Length: 489
Image: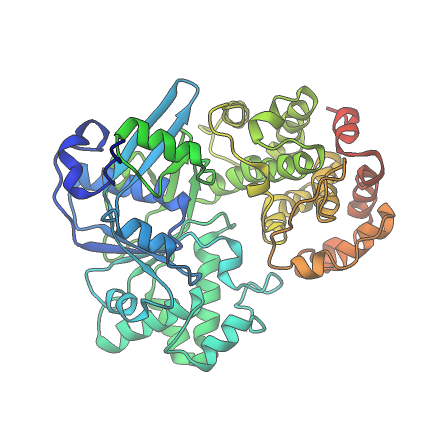
């Protein structure tokens, strides 16, 4: 049997129907992206290629992995940076080959090349999808966490950084010293006020090195906020098979995703940007209403689904939402507890947004694994659930369903489903979170609320939070399915 050819730029003539555009001018690199994971490749990279197709510009992307693993770099560079986006919807599968990714680097192996690019005046945007934990942020102050091991090492050796704030500060210092205009720093992570949050982390790191550098970054560097949305699961063998069958070529790095996508961007780019609006992005003055709606409605219910599903034995989101009582619970949570906390433009129909989310969750083709969503709960719970809970409590309103979501995370951390099946806990605070988990619901709540990195003391001490949380933690004894089925919808 003849082996399939591997995806490469030499194969363009046979890929015409799977390209965003049949014509293509190879762009120079104008964007460096830190955290070259599946989400970026299914989201910003696609928007950027479509923008270049419509309006031109040198906005080729260099992607950077930060974990020391060279496998993704090697796989993508063996394919000339090409990969396929496997879009799975109820109507079927659509495969598109993306060409915007020009180069892939792996830290720390490619540090010299990375900093050469970051110092290049043609690079005008540095974007990020590094997840909440990649910011090395003290959740209590919002500043950089000076106790973070990587941060301490970067402050001791600022010319050999490994963390996101260390890399950004070192690169911006190089540009300042060379008289090169600073690049714009564009966060694309699910973090409330992500641009402002990243700016505070970077500036506080810079001030730990030099007050002057911190002031220069604060006054001269743009950190626009964004809201990003597209469900992008982890790649499976079925995605590789789909790409191979449709393209007739092997792709070592396909990206599965849903058809829906959204990108809302604060329009503040002093040295320019791609014409992303030509690809459907919304450029606005204030991202916050869109950001909060997405964080609370989508991400908050995604986490709720993930933790209840891990306990109840639902492996994918579509399987979970097909359970009538769980769907009713999520619908009621969005309608009665989350939507009332949001202040959105009149044109934003929150109930229509709710219905669209439920339809996206039910997509049977996507197979978004609940275990993937359940990762890094200590970083996700505060912006996704606690901010909504605090808003409800301050308004004197009930939080029963939101409390159930938080309690489900507590019980999830025990590392096994209700029927005893074991699973791993992936979280930067995993050792501490799983050290001592009492069997008594009230003691469990007391133990977890004492973790200040997750729960602000002023919230943790509130009885109007503790009472419903302790009631919800009874799922420790009655099981997730019974808690779902008996929850008031």
